Figure (cartoon, rainbow, N blue to C red):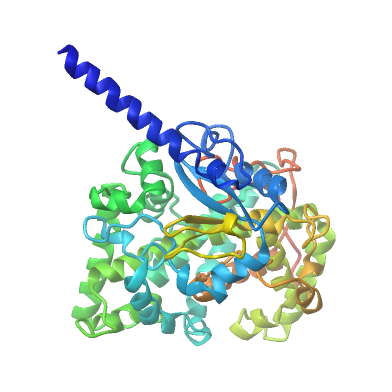
Length: 499
């Protein structure tokens, strides 16, 4: 027995030595870095005292200018933290062939909803991207526009009712906005009327929140899956809670079966996916599981991101009443030229609205990081800064967007940064809320469309201002990679006179 314990002690000692050796990678390479904690690496404070952005923004500020990148650690796994815009441009665009993988966990066999465009890598991603690209053209967005407007009009009615009933007209707006985007996505991506604006406990929304916040395993196992996705896949691990997986796969199967049986056609994303299902077995065909996975990522990518962006926009408009007044004036004038109807053409004519939207995403990039993995060794021109094969790469969008070199006085909310003239002055890849290059966000047109419609109709009908409980500086949620306000956003909401 004593021999067994002695061997166990030796194995544990060797394992700890190996793990600590892993965490000396950047020191051995001579690359600037902060000393990691054991075993959490650079993530010691994440989900405890700091958000993802709060951890990495100081690293960006500290090491920018020391080289093309610095080093960080996900647990014991070394990762490249890119600091130089030229290198970012090469990774995302010029040398994309070497950096097309995200390195995010997916297991499409046991966890089929993870077999989506965001999570897949390699040839599977390439084939799926080609299949889906035609469904996200501006023409297809125009196809779905009226569906989004119908939900937005219901959103305005509910907002009016809630604001009148609320003490001092103060509402927590992010929950309502999340229900608006959930209803839009429920209708467009899943082909169902979930009506969460009227029913906040609708299963579709409850499960959507669980998908974003909850995991099947503990935080330690979850961190392991994020740091070692390939090994986690070989171990046949799953990330999504089973009830979430079963719920959304079930909805899609029922919708597909009903529409095929009754030959139902609608102006939505699900209809486009079903057109591809008819070609199943062909090169551009889709299985039911693939359809479910794409509808599911449509939910995750659009549910929180669009609603959170709208919330941050209204927060800044409430703080900057002059900007709010100018934007409302534009919205009212443009809609008047279109018989007071919110049309596709009207939204595209609202140039200041687009500037406000862009500046909101500049100051509050909801997905604060872009991730890639190197397929082969990559020479940056300095042997010390060679990016080795299979190295995880982090680009901190939040850091770039708050860098005074590109955006002077970065904490100031200033839509004038996004006039055509100002955009031309900045280097490429200085604004990355949707990523860039061949693997940018495929749904950016849809996300932008639902957010712009929502903001336009809200500003036409309501005035937003700070309430007693509205903080001057927002704190960010510590439990989520996505940027969101920790305690929601409380604003005073008052109806404006008929325009």
